[in-house]
Image 1 (tube, rainbow over the protein chains, first blue to last red):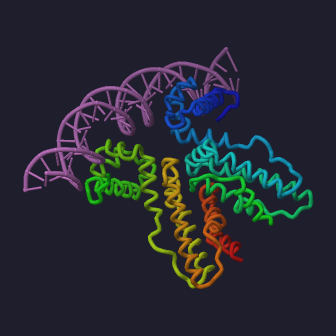
Image 2 (cartoon, protein in one colour; image 1 turned 90 degrees about the vertical axis):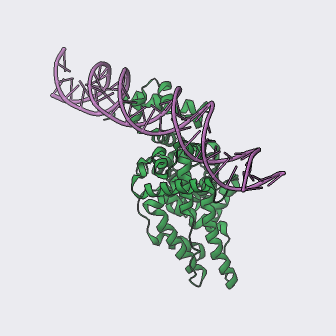
Image 3 (cartoon, chains in turn yellow, orange, cyan, blue; image 1 turned 90 degrees about the horizontal axis):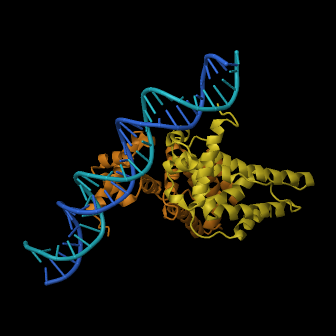
Length: 179
Length: 179
DNA sequence: ACTCTTGAAGCAAGATTTTTGCTTTAAGGT
DNA sequence: ACCTTAAAGCAAAAATCTTGCTTCAAGAGT
């Protein structure tokens, strides 16, 4: 049982924070459980018992960082909203840290909900945009369609294809959907 | 220098085969370097020196297994060819072993070419289909478009969204592209 | 054919990480 | 205040990973 405010919660916070700090200090590649434990002021066995292994822990931390902090900006129309959102999404996710978080999130337990959470975040953001458009009386595609034709291609390129991704790519996807 | 037929090549083969065998025996989750080394009749340090760590090795093996063995079937027309290919692709990739290979492939060095190779395989297959259609005189989309609107959505669902994927999904993507 | 060179493999010791049984702590319930 | 219990600490044992040095064998040069 996780008691909010209890010891468990404090330990979890400390460990997550230790991971973020160490990542920020550039130790991305050399992160180890004992190192994280030391920084968090916790025993390694606590981490092994709670998370199982480093991948699970990194996956948890990554998902937290991928959670959007603000609702998508309102630019007055569906096309503008979606384009702005897609462009920002692509920009954040294709940056080196963004890519690292996505990979980390995917590497956790295959049957866990971490990867699903990422997609849920995107779906929620898109949903907000579509709901606004609906209220304005604009015709809107459904969320699934947007995920398939805008989000998925961006993610696919980020994960599977080397090379730069320009903002224009996001705009192109959106306009080929709405056009 | 890798001399084909030389000792290096034999060791590589033996190690890859050991991984495949052990995976087939169900030890997916408990695979370790010493275990693989023992099965391959090789010293663990050989594996560490050649691959660096288990992730790199699994990634290499996964990419090999993801290489298509046969060119896409010719069904006489672009739509039929693409549908059949997409359906089979989805079927293979969304199966538990398929998903595991994809994840393993992504696991390797982010700057390595393993993930890129996966996408290249798909692109090659699509290319064959499109080239055939061109020769028949059919109008064809370009490879990028097919990757964006057919391959990417399937991969996105496989990686990020839990739940079953029906063959109809692949067909729907193809027909919404060509329709 | 016979060395010579060289990159990779083997070996073994040492360092580090991971697991595990048991003890202690502290949050929440009675 | 006193139980109950899930989670944390501790420490020893097991396993894995690293590393310096040695040995091997494929291919090149003579």
